Image 1: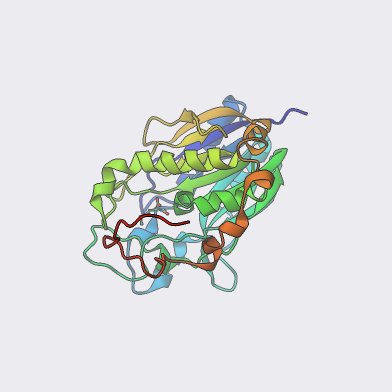
Image 2: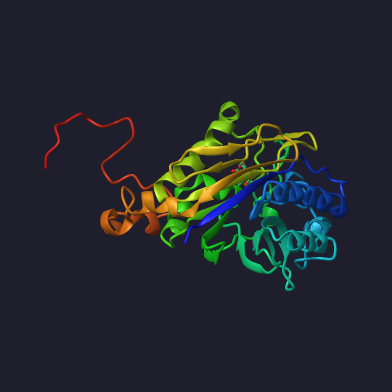
Length: 321
Ligand code: CDT
């Protein structure tokens, strides 16, 4: 059996605050059709692909932004996307803001099969930014106010492989890939909305593109998996969002990359069997991992410098065994 998939990374340009769902879904459908022209099996849309990135605004009344959330999936407005995908026999990944029937809010993504069934759902684990209004910022990043965190990284049997999902800031954490990798993940789908300007430390702005690829390429290589990272890009309500959506092989190499900050689809053939080249050799977890040495990773959250060590104050005595 060959396990070769044609994957489309469907980058979106900006979605402004007043753009309605119907217009946005039409854009998604247009990208899906580009995917069909390129014979894609799977098209990957970004994080919060149906709305503007609304956590950039503070509202005292959280419910004021409830219209940015989906209370069902597919909703009436999103149903045409499901219908078109089924007609074209293309699976897809979609990020959106989810409101549960009992009023919980999540930053969510779903994986949909070629016949329109929702195969899996993921709720963002690592919520970046802040909980409270910080007026000194030129724009807010209030994901920790508008969303609750999800509590697990799961994989799903889909597209003849083992598929996982993560969302935006998750991609910066090596734990994300490793927890997926430990479940045999062969393809990680990651949508993002990444402002190029980082108010707490603007020295990172010039490195936004470098860091984006650095983390995803390392995650792919160190776990022997394909990674598809897809942006909502461009100038959204005055805030520049990074593009550079890419498809990354288990070797860590970028095999396709968007060149604009607009709606754009790039595609690549992904051989899922290539994962074994890395999973069975250099990153043979069974053979080489040493979990007994890694206990701090799950027992600790923050840094704990061992007693007797003070940064900048070591004496350079010789090391004893
Ligand atoms: N959407 C999202 O998670 N964006 C973050 C911005 C970090 S700055 C608060 C990211 O990691 O790209």
